[in-house]
Length: 415
Image (cartoon, rainbow, N blue to C red; front, side):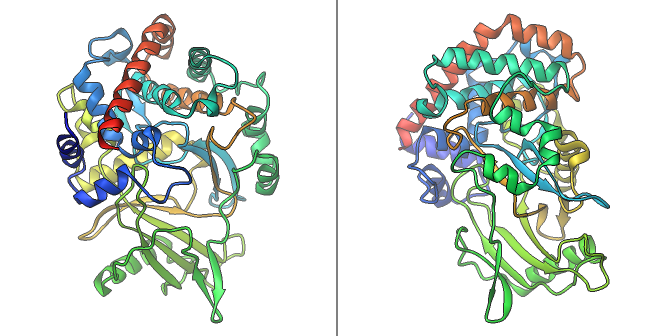
């Protein structure tokens, strides 16, 4: 397959994007590092599942039986986990470790989730994750921690370093600054979302790819009406600032998003943040839809219907975050615009990746454990599935190598 045909295929999987947006996703200029096979893998989630389907890697396999189907996260990889600061009704803001994006979730084969996570480890730079041990040993450890997550909610406390820091009850006791100070270099909380300019609070856009798109008045009105409907009880109708932006990298690359700044009403209790920063992100069908194109397709998980997308994202929030899902994170359908995810931006939130945790490779173990715990919540026969994963671990290792080689080959064509 030549470059033109491959880009055509990527465009077919992303019909809502322009061809230029596809090219920008292949070679983004807003990455902290040079474009690589790993950034390509991150950016084109449906293409991974498209290759998985075409190669027939999991088709008819013991670990991909219908009885094991459960709620999957859709896009697990090394850089898609983080520390979230959440505010629940009537309670203080809490920090906890989980998946970053709830809008990729859907019902599917958990083995495909695990295989994508293992492939991301193979595609990452070796210095990020090896630290003196062969990649096979690292992946065996990952599968072992994944099975522990399938077995119970008990955090793997025998591990040290990042695992010890991220242990649920410890994280909730610590302030966000404590977590920031103890994290290894690179993992800094998101700060400075807004600043004072000309005597007024305004959003900071220096870290965003702000779009040249001028927001029409009718769009502004729809967004204002929606935010008033969702948060009007505690926040003023007037938007203090609204900016459009678009990322080039990652699964949401090329999508036009909005960031808004709102101010709390005077009669609202002070436990609610005085200034609220919200991201308004368009929602699409999850990348795993490409895996079900010819397989037995759970329609609700892959539908483009806005209402079904909204329901799917809400279910992902309940499953992936449970009681930690906060008051402000919501999935909505905006009139004549489609489904959107509303999510707050707090100081104290930050992504975690093995690239940044240079002295502690146990981060990927924590991620594997979280992935197993999420799967366990909805899988019908976790014990049988755990046994199947254990018995087929060598096959999974080989499959992850196959998918890694395929992604390397495809990136070599387009780069």
